[in-house]
Length: 239
Image 1 (cartoon, rainbow, N blue to C red):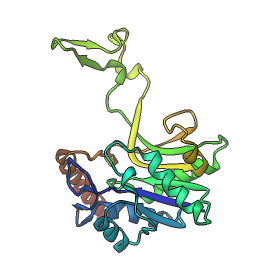
Image 2 (image 1 turned 90 degrees about the horizontal axis):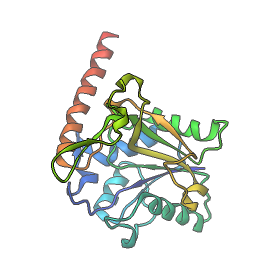
Image 3 (image 1 turned 90 degrees about the vertical axis):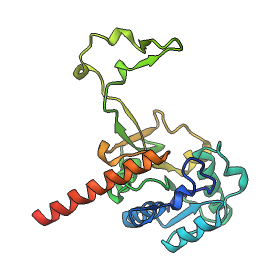
Image 4 (image 1 turned 180 degrees about the horizontal axis):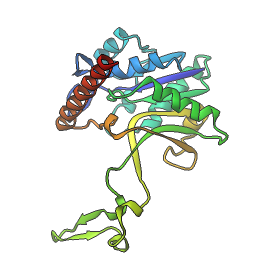
């Protein structure tokens, strides 16, 4: 059995009530819930929250709230793995042993059901015995040519040896897309590192990835979402 765990605490600081703020007509968490439903991958889709209002919104879109997250796991410093592990432990204590667990972020409106399915397929069908499969996207510029600004206000390269290397000759680099993290439940429980050799990367195009931590991020995401919706409508009309 597979479960989806959507962490959504109530104490977001930079964007108050971020997890249920309206994004293109519905609470942003609804996009994650609906993608999980459309994927067909999950026997249970739960939201782990400490907040009654978030719980009510999540339930109205079809997610389950089998428990309220303890305050000890709802502060600014609690990581993803302890929250997911808490959910898996709750199921095990109630006689249910999920084999695979997918953490889906609540503020990931660009998430798609097909990507969730691709992540699950990579986790279970690959010849490599992966612990995790998660979404990534490529950096738009070679990180090997990155510079830092020193305390004196001057600049220096992180790797000066790459100054004369052409960008097209440098290896592609990727970063976490912040959408979903499939994992074997035993790997979550063991606290295995996600960004390591035991993980598979599901590549997403950059135009479907937007981290949302600030109001500026939110506004950029809404603009990008609007463009994508318009492009999709045009494709249907031309077809």
